[in-house]
Image (tube, rainbow, N blue to C red; front, side):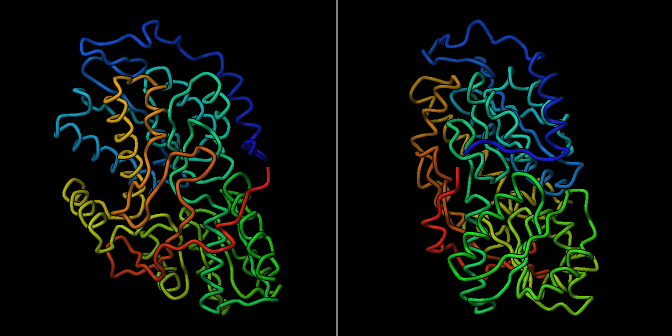
Length: 419
């Protein structure tokens, strides 16, 4: 599927790419050289260190997610280094905060790319899409995005961890159907960000609607739109029986809060990016706990399962002043996947970008301790099609509790995104 970026973001990215394309550093002349033990090395790898990049958002629309993802990856690096590192080398994570600004995001990628082996995170599917041709064509370093657009699937080097937004949305609508909150003939609303994220989720809702005999009422918004009053009014007037929100935490909180305040009592489901536990302390907190649901490709951090419980304990010990959210699991899992690829690449005596890519293609059944097994052997597919459905709960660490364990809807299993 071809990358697609729209609106003002596209214009900014076009300018940034034109500038950034000329500013990259030259590749190291000793790429592929072997160390004393016979391990081939390249960008980001020395005899004592492996440098990985992290392109995050700690000051923009996904600030809470970015902070949790980054700190979880720093925790993973610290734990890995204390255990002796990988292939006799210590892990170094180089972090850049782009604040969800397209120029900063592409500029940060251009700055770090020549000096890192790959990226353990890159928040923002429009930004990843904008450099995907560079990644596939000349850079060839693994990028594990904190983004789930189907537009990113198919790249050999940009590897999506989890169900894509379209598949996740189909699973969320399947949950509403199973719970008999909606039925054939109903209208469902969809509030979504313009661009890759929202429009990919919309493709999923349209597919699910077609399969179930539903009608989708669309409400497109921008990341800068924080008041959902107009959208709630339009959906209420249209008579929708449920709402999907494919936006950020602020937009989800506004939508649910306004709906509750105006007596619009319908269930709302959101993609994994549309929630942060900090929302429970806001005026929308009570409404979010009543009839709002979130999908993700992992158990929540507050789950009693072995994986979440162990990580929650370690993260809390490392960052006692910071709360828990699902960004902790997302970040830690991404770093762990990269770590597994590095270990396998070391066994094959090839720590070049090509060697790490080959190693990643051998990894499957990863992450079962966190509720879903992921398979990275096929670049043309997301690592899973399963979704866990959760509900906000202030009494649970991390603010989410499971209401439906990992499942894949028949409509999601057979779904193939349009090219």
